[in-house]
Image (cartoon, rainbow, N blue to C red):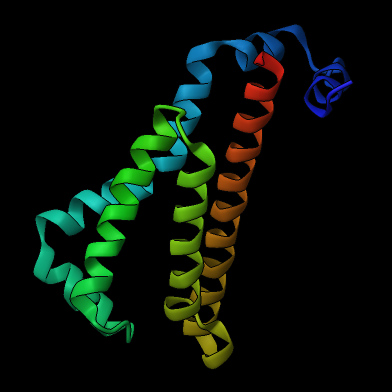
Length: 150
């Protein structure tokens, strides 16, 4: 028995209305749009204000800043689209996850801070960790769904 089938049968305790929502095909797309939304908006914003995107990379010590800005825009836009259309989700989630991991290390370095700055950076760090886990879960679901359909 596949792991995905085992997961489906173990969810029998969920109320019927919850199952109906979870099995609704459009719901999966809405979840992927929600997961990708911060990246999609960030990529569009950076593309629309490229000097600002370069300045942001330089502010966090990422050099050459122009290259990092181009990479961030490409990963955010291409990764978001792939995730939303449910194609190569493993690649999209991996790329967005690595980008998020880099951002966590340079922008949310709570271990070097104190007081309110530490509090805010620590919260942002773990919010980003949650995003990475959500991306990994989306990739896992996509792979298991394809495996079950094969």
